[in-house]
Length: 175
Image (cartoon, rainbow, N blue to C red; front, top):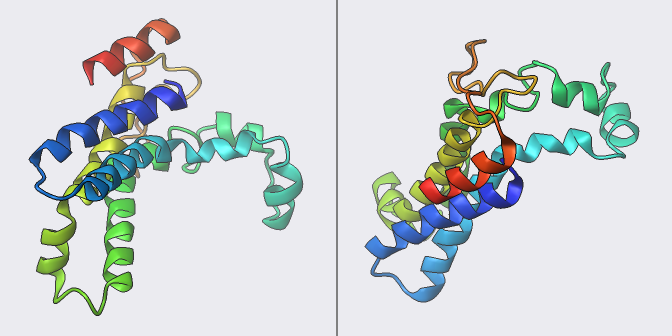
């Protein structure tokens, strides 16, 4: 799927979630935007396709492979690898939860209170992330053979689609 469709899928998830909220307009917008961010984040690894990747990140980290090789390979950090896993969805959601806790350490009185106050944004982010993975599962397999949903397992799931453009918009309408 393309990045716009992933973003709109996350935004759609967030829009449904905010119907359960009695919060104000700005809080609802935050849930929707964080859900959209969750829908986009798994494709962050596409940064390796940036034309300056090899001269910057590649040389700083002494990478043995070019950005294009990294993107289209089956390393754990390649596209459809770690960032396209349910583990990554839980892990990144936990990192956001931790950041909320650290930022609001004087405001919140324990983990239960943090979860109560921030459950919709966290659920929105997580579901936006997961819907990205589901959307990629039913697109063509390409070189990856689906997504590594059960990382660190080496097996990929999905890759059942045949036509890129049809799948993108069909999947978006389903979501």
